[in-house]
Image 1 (cartoon, rainbow, N blue to C red):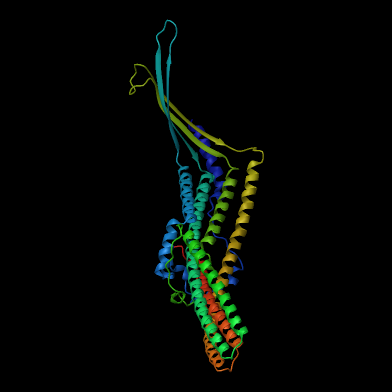
Image 2 (cartoon, rainbow, N blue to C red):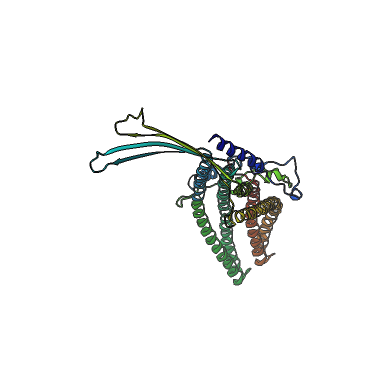
Length: 454
């Protein structure tokens, strides 16, 4: 028996040396030329390092985000997936331990003319697979990578949920601002109708001017109704995001919102690599890497050590002094020889999946870089447009005031007044939209850098 064990161990050591490459750990791949998409800037403010409470300072919004993190269905499903992956990882770790079991057999026999006999035996046994070629180790590392992928998926869902709730909240603020502007303009048109009616009685305006003013008022009344409907729909959508029934959304104003304001156009690649979706792609690539190693390990023999020990006794014999001891120790090596090409096919599939995962990882990095660059451009463009909007609104308000005075004294036509007021309304609505776009740009940048995960 000693000689047999010696042979088994010797063979195991020899093959172990030949298969040591199967224990190689996964390393993040070097993606060439991607650094050309970004330029590192030491003045860059790392928005992703800010927790969402530091970034979103509106206390009402913070309350809604907290509610969403507690009740949102997608986030709770993502957390359930983490628990499943954690259990799978624990099972993979326990695979290194021996399998232990105990058997209890009892028998009762007898024949004609003979008394009956009773005997039983207790045989604990154990078996242990020697992980000489990394099959169990690669399975464990693959399970670890899968677990990490589910963790980062949960973070990605959380980050997306945080910024989606924030965007929905700021959309409400924008709609509120546009509704106030439209209602204020509606009041102005009511005053215009009264003025034109008086001028008509004085012979200084025509019926056509009065009718045109009324038509414009009706148009704005329709816009007010549309905005009220959009506000109601947005409130319902925000409640759904939070995982609760619709309720009255208390909120602030668009002009009172504040955010960090210092940015640089260039973003280091190292920051983009911290995004949850990039980390998911990297973890999935690691999973495929270990799957290839595990498929390669299938070509090597399996080494199993097993043994059992116990005793057999009959009726009348004390357990402390059994009749027979049972001892058995077995070592075995199973070398795959022919499995209908299953192992080769499994390896080929695993390698193809690894190649696809590498391509997906690179594409995820490219998409991340595109999102960052687009978010920066959105924020910068909105800032420039907003500066123009503010100047335009001031100018058009002065134009409306002057044309109204001129019309009262007969120096300007009603068409000039209508045109000036319509232009002012459009400019004020654009100002609200561009202010929202500015906020959306900074939120998009925060999200594209992986912010909102904690």
